[in-house]
Image (cartoon, rainbow, N blue to C red; front, side, top):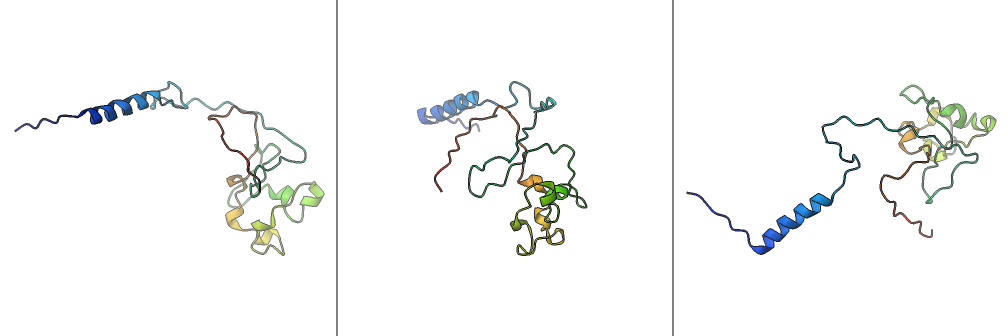
Length: 143
């Protein structure tokens, strides 16, 4: 026995409205089909800035004001420490790693650097002059 389902005007409106909304969604991929291989990203020029960048909010991790292409971070090596470690930062004229990155903040040393803070690029990123992918509506509020 066949069943016939009759859609009322409200259901037809919902189905038609959702189809209309789907037609307006645009992908950042453009018109490329999902199964097409992605285009390689365009190489952007890293902005170098003496003195670093200002922070947009109080607890924002500092942004990296130099190139990092040749820096290496692995389980055994962190080249950021060449300049930013407690025993080298003064000679390199670089900011020291924050004391929040050490198991004993009162006695910072490479030996007590937290392993959870070892991979700097989790939070710290270089800057480029790139066109935003989407509009940024962030506004800084008073602290």
